[in-house]
Length: 136
Image (cartoon, rainbow, N blue to C red; front, side):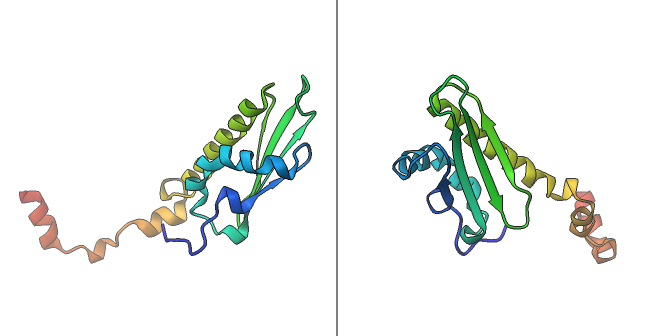
């Protein structure tokens, strides 16, 4: 994977939506800090995260984390955990899993075009190399 000049981080990309105040942003960003390693492969200026909560601290609260990365479909994760911290951890872990799944789908095994281009050209292999490998 090529290095990204300005890697995305939670601190740079996170917005707080409905149900949260700007005062909540710092502790939410701290909880989501483990996402930095996963987001580092994307450019900060083309990555956005938004977390919101509906009916905060009520029996039916719902936390939503949305992620927009240029060139990809929007990823949305939700949690109905009653504890706010547990709900935030739940959406964070679910986002990490979905981003990993999306990356796996783009690897050659799942993408015929990439798989065919990743295979070496049989004409480029020297027959002498094949004989050396068989003798080892």
